[in-house]
Image (tube, rainbow, N blue to C red; front, side):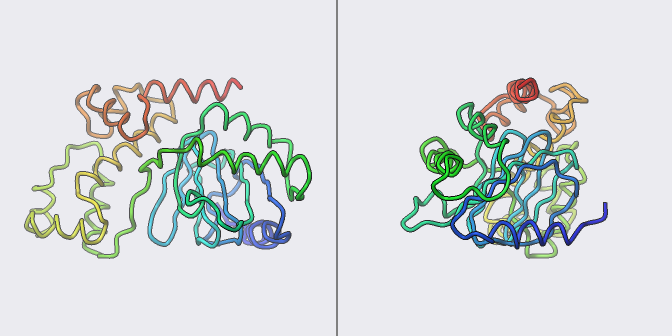
Length: 273
């Protein structure tokens, strides 16, 4: 889809940071499939409904599933790419304050519990600058204030960007073969590495092991497939290379803190609301 630079510039540069003291609020169904790399002077809380949103910074590629939010500190360059133009994105942009909690200084993805969901849905009636001292400003600031109290688990829903071109080829191989069982020894042999040297390359470049990367990538793909609602949990497990549904479910739970079936049920409840 053709991008709209005018809309992006006007929205992110002129409007978000125009009033340095306001909290900026914006709700919109994503009509464009890519918001190019940009940054702003306010921290961003981005909550997604309906499908997956990919957020890419200089060093990482984040995978934001429905019913989760990402916190992006002020000044961090990032691009936004929803999987579907029908994704609803709810944004709050907060001015940076002195002596803020460390929570606000790091990027992270967190699940939205019922309390936070209701507070975010309440902001649906607003758009634009929330002026300091107004009731809407007080409520929005309360959302920010509560985050360090309820968001204790920064979900590992991001993958580092490879710097080494050789590793880039291997990661594309993984991406293209998620439905198969990919063995580390086979990958090393196919791409001309010893297992030891490839292990070191993963650790040096990505700061994680092959199995950590492979596991997270499989689960991220599984979330995409679950949200499409075309396949059963068993079929999704097979699509991402798991022959055992219990193993798939346990791995999913370790990363997201809920079972695949529970994740789907939660999404259905949101839609009914």
